[in-house]
Length: 379
Image 1: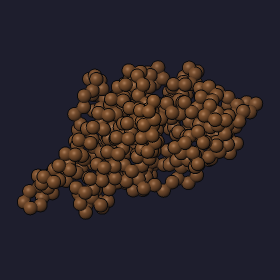
Image 2 (image 1 turned 45 degrees about the vertical axis):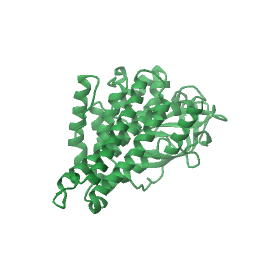
Image 3 (image 1 turned 120 degrees about the vertical axis):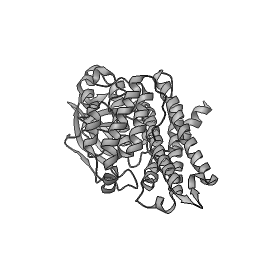
Image 4 (image 1 turned 180 degrees about the vertical axis):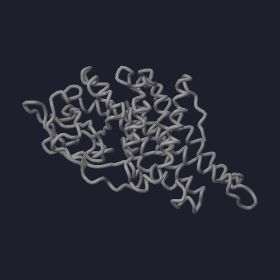
């Protein structure tokens, strides 16, 4: 079902129409087969890049589209409604480019951003570690100064696009404490950089997730993004933006689950009428609709604050928390609406439910979001 959106310009409305066309033609026909096979759709990101969809919120001078974040997130929602693995991948691409855009030098941005947001190169974000997930300050991966630049040693875990990416935005320790972390842009072909076997996940099986090992990886001095020791603040700022991306994808996933549930409820008949006309089930669908619309409003509020250069960190945490908890609930309810059929792979709602679960975990677990929100309330 096409969502009735309130967009700021006619150009934005045309953009959403283009996204729907690409999604229906390029994503929907292959999502089930690629997810079943665990096949990473690398070519899809090239297609989206050529259509200008990977650089939507980036300035035009670097090859982006200069779109407001509220438009970019609605594009992400439309992509996520058709293929959540790809929606997450587009969000990760923006997350990976965020430090370079906002903290890199003009020379660094002009050198690397056009390829990164044009779809020619795919990125990955390396923050978490086996013993440092929700606590990035506990990271052990270290960057040591060399005569010509830096040497990286350590392991990063849960890297979306790990082993598939062309470059990695890496947070590594250059000193002690929270001010002893720095940010680097590492090419995938750097000697000593290897990927472990991909994780065998419950959902998002077409999105490769793997640990990355840095064994004496040497990079040039100009691969440092921002100032030495600025890495943790860079990472946290990037995560605020990234959480909005996940909120949008989760909302799209829930919208797709709702659409399938409504379509089934209209055609399935029991006791002489369509099951959507049974009050118990009709009310369940109404609650699902209310949840999807509420999540959409929440992430759009945060996005508009970002577009106005107002603080939005708390709102980003709220949006991520609300949207992903909602997606888990709505996808589970969609399985219930379809009954036994919902539990089979003949219908996509069981896949939607498996995909929704991880959205409560990555980009900061929802328990961490509650911690962030409560601490800001205390201040």
